[in-house]
Amino acid sequence: RKEVEQDPGPFNVPEGATVAFNCTYSNSASQSFFWYRQDCRKEPKLLMSVYSSGNEDGRFTAQLNRASQYISLLIRDSKLSDSATYLCVVNSRAGGFKTIFGAGTRLFVKA
Amino acid sequence: NAGVTQTPKFQVLKTGQSMTLQCAQDMNHNSMYWYRQDPGMGLRLIYYSASEGTTDKGEVPNGYNVSRLNKREFSLRLESAAPSQTSVYFCASRKGVGTDGYTFGSGTRLTVV
Image: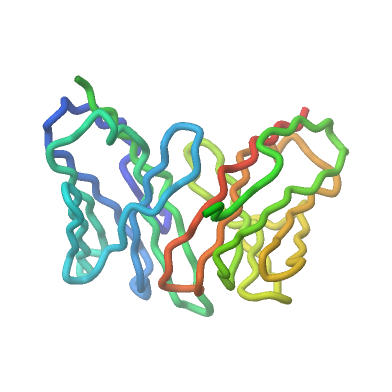
């Protein structure tokens, strides 16, 4: 089992739709969590950190469920420009810090 | 605000050739990283430097060496390139180690033939 798992998709949604991605992690010692966005043939860029209390940034909401060991990203009112791959990233502290990237979930938003 | 600058952007090598990928950051970050990204596998850590003067192996260090030249610069060297090293390489930096997000460079697309 991979330490961080994401549904690879692709998710194909129309403009204006709400879409949600989940990411599961296996290490219960995981401490910090992030969502990154990666456009085709570009570098990953930090989208948002994920806090235990959940956090929202405009149309984007991230949540953490420590009991079930998953994080989620909700995108409301999808735009064409949201088309990208979304990477889940988990930092763990077990014998030193370790950062694991998920393989990413591809999103296509259609007009 | 340049952030993280990587060179070159593209490179084709023949098997057995050597090359150095350069990376520099201007954000006064302490830690720097080299990752490779292959389809369907996510980013995998090659080497990292938690602070100036230190380097450590990551998940996939074989076939690579690194140098933390100063606080700004962190280079990755392929001594004898192999086709298995065909990949996209990203340099990244962050202020601390555990709880900060990364800033990535724009990547180097390397093909080994």
